[in-house]
Amino acid sequence: MGICQNCGSWVDEGDICMNCGGSGAFLDEDNENYDSGFPRRPHYSRADELGMQAWRLRNNHEYSSALSYINSALKLDENHPDNWNMKAIILEDMKKFKESEKCYDKSLEISPDRIVYENKARMLYGWALEMREKSKRPRYNFYRLEKAKEIIERAIKAIPKKYSEEDINKYIDLRDSIDDCFRYENLYLDRIKMLESDNKDDLFTIIVTNLYDGHIELSQNLPLRLVRQQDKKSGSDVILVYAGKYKIGYVANDEDMVYNLTSSACQLKDRILDECGAEYCFYLERYSEVQFHIGKIVK
Image (cartoon, rainbow, N blue to C red; front, side, top):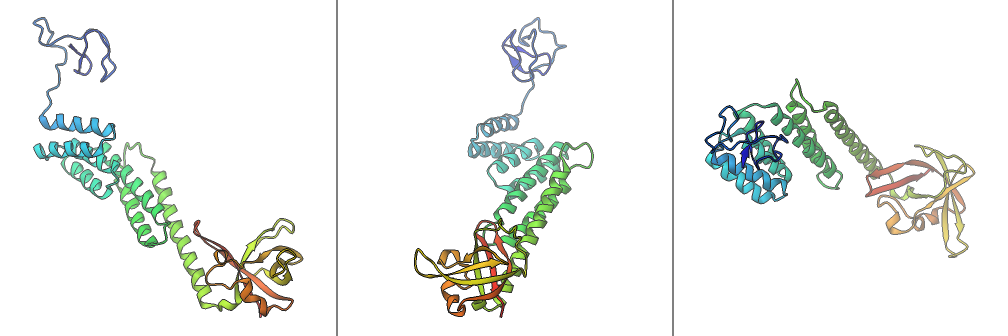
């Protein structure tokens, strides 16, 4: 065994240092001929050793064991900023973001450090991103967006003003995308309110099959025609939807294809002897769960 001249790590004599990559002669400090001019092996405290073991476990994805070791290290020395930073990283790996943030703050309280500020910012970015994605679920969407906005603001604030390697534009882009999600959700709710305030008997869901022949662009208040016609295969009546002279689709009739605030073709057919006027309302959309073209009979 010997000591690396560069970093003081123990290595096999004549081998390459696995810590810093240094190579050359490694001298044993127990040897009487040891030159004291070379760095000696670092002397670690018990808290340091437990912290290093926690880090090795973390790198092996053994997060629960790593957390146990780092907690033991902090019991021995609760003012160890590196171990608080390490605990924050382990908690981040475990998706325990709130606890992770507290540990980053504790580390920074003891010893402000650029790297720890950047670690905190990256953790907050990931947390905000996760909250934004969770907002796409049906429940608590506005609450999650509000939390995401608060978190990304803290992330931006955490980035050091000087000498930071973090790209602040990435953080600003996420903040802007969260604002876009707010607008998206509000537009969806506004359209739901419009449908709720209207007469369900006049509303219908359009199954769009062809917009290409007439280069049709669906837009609000686009004039439509509903044409009642017997289907040759089934013998039952269907209601076709035309924009000008071009057939663009038909009125939905199957329960899973009809939006719940609109009427089915079966419910409308007695009101349409031959054909009647209508208009396109809008495309009602909320991610993959809600995707409906909505039309309305014009009296």
